[in-house]
Amino acid sequence: MEKIIAAGPVIVKDGRLLVSRDWKDEFYKLPGGTLHPGEELVDCVLRELKEETNFEGKILESLPTMTVDKRPVTGEDVEIELNHFRVELNQDIRDFRGFEYENHEVRWLLVRDIMEGKFNVAPNIHFLIEQGKILPWINYLTGSKKRFYEFIGMITPRDKVAILTHNDVDGLASAVFLEEILESKNIGAVEIEFFDIHADMVKKILFKLHEKEITKVFFCDLGVDTIDSEGLEEMSKEMDFFILDHHPMNENFQFKDNIIKSSSEDCATMLIYDIGQGVFDTEEWKWLLGAAMFSDYSYRVPKNFEIMKRLYPGITFDNISGSIPGINARKINSATTYYNETLEHVYEIIKTRDLDQLSQVHDIVEEEIERIVNDFFENEKFDKKKDLHIYEVVSNFKLSSTIATMISKMKNQGVFVFYQKWKDGIHANARSNAGIVDVSLLMKECTEGLEDANGGGHRQAAGAKLMEKDLDTFLKRLRTSKLFISQNTKF
Ligand SMILES: [Mn+2]
Image (cartoon, rainbow, N blue to C red; front, side, top):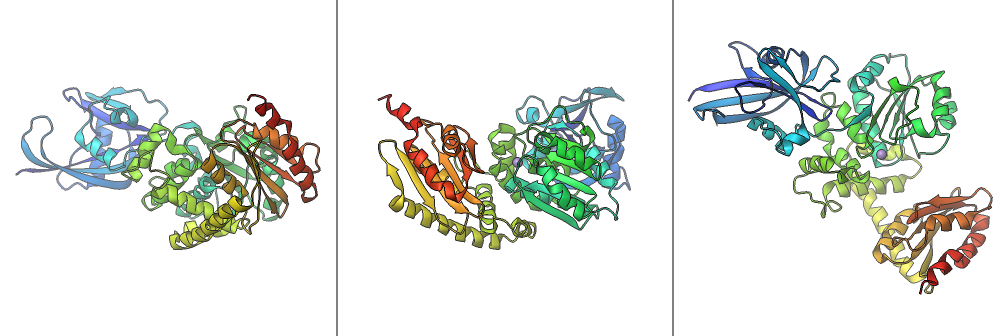
């Protein structure tokens, strides 16, 4: 049988795939073609790209090859080997309208539309989608990869670089991927800080960064443009920064060149993974991507669930909690509980992919959770009339929030207030899954006017912080709160 070798570029931008077709074709295909005698595959790809679309690009990586034994249109017997390469265009595309070039129709098709069968495409495109090589990727609300790489390109060996990231699974994973990208550009010796999203977060860290003579700062998964734009303004006087984030955007943010935002359902890890495609080995980090997507609920939107299914075939909405990404997310969570204030340990474990260590720490934390749950059923203070459960968590790990969520889900009815003595005072967590009592109001009421205390959150889940000396007052207010009475009068 005759054998034909062909090659084509896979170019995906903002969830769209570049395709072309001769007017005679019934379906769209990759803008590729047959290998010329003596030609290298990669040269063939770039030549065909130029011939069919007038675009120029560079090869990023090779993708799986597909072999067919019939011509798609005529059905004629012939062995065709289709070689694929991921290519990045040399120009930044903003206009996704189709155009005509040299008797070809060139178009950007949304990968989602292809998957939904809205367009007729060549079998190898479906093959590559099946293999997870063409993902319906993420939406950039503002900023571009190009700007990011320009920023990185300006970093010199004299610069000192810091990554400031969120102290949750998405933040940890974001920092790992960002550091991978930086390392691939020979930018090393990076300072990494983990923290909670809180007011003045930039202002508070500025002095420390100054002390360490940091000149370039990356923010991951922190929403700084909204929470502390004043702090950023101050920072901009002495250091350059770049923000990679998915929290709601500050529309009036003035440093538009220094930020990429994805939509909130596309977690920061997805964004940085996307930026890093073709730059670092994204294949070996799929497990971490999956864990972050699980942890930030990114999988709940259909297009991202498609990505999850491609990372882990067999995943369904019902089994996702017990699936590999669900378990990995919980393991990383356990590690952050275990190491608490020294998250650099967790970061190191993730970065070195020491999954055994992760499992060991997870087992210890799980065992502790089990002990506390058992203790709760024996020692909680339960007010039957109010259906109010009060319980003090005593543990070396900070677990009151985890336990509150867990037990309230087990019971579903009732109001749960769990508290724990910690280094900086009492931390309380309230849950009311049925929402009968607004626990946000409850936590506010119980901490009102107390020294150095605050409380609030959502109707079904809230928290409070107070000084140890005020614990009795807090508990007394809790037991006598009128918020419960208004509920009882309904009977
Ligand atoms: Mn996040």
